[in-house]
Image (cartoon, rainbow, N blue to C red; front, top):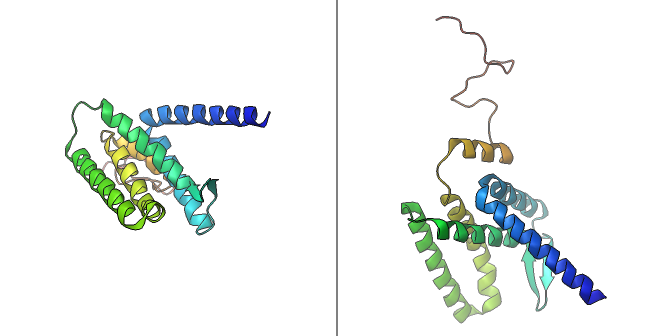
Length: 172
């Protein structure tokens, strides 16, 4: 009975992961919310971040799961791209260099130490490659700014009055 429940739970988790990956392929603002949320959780718990403990003493943190999902979505988005632009090529070169560094680190220091150090680069590289796969869009950047709470009440392109409205034209 326990094996059946565990199998069902894994099947549900896999289905949710595929659904989230499909959503990430289309919506960059959802990815921004995931990244922002994982960074806030990491900052709040600092040293005691909740983790999934795997056999062998391996701990998978929330930021690892988010980075893996976003990196997977970035790779899938890049596979659909007919031609890479300059920034995507440079990020791919950075990714190859990071993988070479990981392989050399595993050979020199062992799996646990090198993967623990590689996690930070995986998060940065995955997120950068993911957002580089989307075309430039003011509307998308505005939505991401609203999600992260970094947007101002009135930007430089939309002057606001003290009451929050647009105000009247004075004819000057």
